[in-house]
Image (tube, helix red, strand yellow):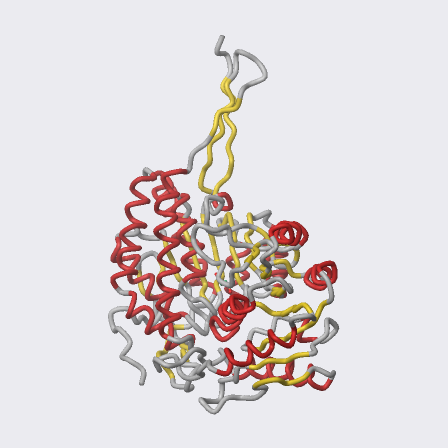
Amino acid sequence: MQPALSQYLLRQGSYINSEWHSSHNSFAVINPADGQVLNQVADAGPEQALAAVAAAHKAFPGWSALPAAKRSELLNSWYQLLIKYQTDLAIILTAEQGKPLIEAEAEINYGASYLQWFAEQAKRLDGVTIPAPSADKRIIVQRQAVGVVAAITPWNFPNAMMMRKAAAALAAGCTFVVKPAQQTPLSALAMAVLAEQAGIPKGVFNVVVGTDAKALGEVLTTDPRVAKFSFTGSTAVGKILAAQCAKGIKRVTMELGGNAPFIVFADADLDAAVQGLLVAKFRNAGQTCVCANRILVDKSIYAAFISKLLAAVNGLKVGTGFKSSSDLGPLISDEALQKVAKLVDSAIEQGAKLELGGQRHKAGKQFYTPTILSQVTADMAISQQEIFGPVIALQQFTDEAEAIQLANATDYGLAAYFYSRDIGRVFRVAQALQFGMLGINEGAISNAAAPFGGIKHSGYGREGSQYGLDDYTDIKYLCLGGLE
Ligand code: SIN
């Protein structure tokens, strides 16, 4: 049964300049597990997005001029509140997104860890002096906040993806306007409640919730007061938004889709590889950009690996996120489920073998059974697209060179995983794989200390880590002369 949603954190409209906005039109936020309406939320249009940008623009001089230690203190207060309200936040997250409560709690902690991390990094926004070419000069390099940051964040991690951007932006001294996905606005609005409680000043953090993604996106990518735009979502949408930003020469961070290979070499610890694959594949029911998508297994251990995998995946429980036994929740929409089912069906038509699952799950309309397909080949749609569902698609390879060639045969370059106990191979393969992030004998790679981001069609820019502030700051060079 669904626990009650916190009335303190549950809001009905956009948060702009520290005010809660209503609107003539509203839209329903739906629980994907059972189709129930959770809340009606005011549907913001472009005028609200403009108001949010104006508020962020007005707040920027004051916020960026605060001592770093003060910004750090405020971010830290916000972090403490996330921890205090983590159960309530997790309940809202599971209700609107569907993931099991235990995963929602982990996501709240993950989102909070970015606040904690960047509260520290705010104090380390240092510059350098560079030896000058003549004795009468000094070269000083400083980093300054870029200005207003606008962001569009996805439904798969409604808390953490927003906090990864907001924490870095605010730490650097930028002000922030976010449009969360229309499927999951409640988590973002709940964070605005806590931002206000933490004392984040008026106009520094703004949330615009609405269904007209095109019109809202147009404001956030073209308004001249926005200095930087950050997006997490599909490559197709990212290309459109990046093109819009290009007209105003805006700074851009794009965290886009992936098609992660997960390679199991013959010398791997197979039990560890199975456990790593469960994590890398089934987190959020497979709806994660860094999810393992193409499972490449050495032919000499293929049969042994499948048999261990079948035993492990058979044990996974599907059900609503509030059932404590559930390992996997629903997919976000019926459309998403149909896309997954179509990829599975077409792979089978083209010769893949169904080892497990391959159908909707009786838990509800949007639930899909954990599925294993073997004899998958690189030319199948399931190997070429992001599955975004709980499906393991197994391919075979004969040697290291073929594994690398198969792994790199994609336009995407976000995450890749491989399992091997041969140290020479570990370094060779790590060097050869064309991806921004590698899990080596590890299925869980995301954390605030790590630089998250991709290459190729998976985007550019890094979030988290000591590099995470770079995208929110400009380098300013001061040439000090006449010193002799
Ligand atoms: C994503 O799916 O976009 C990111 C998930 C993560 O941070 O691990």
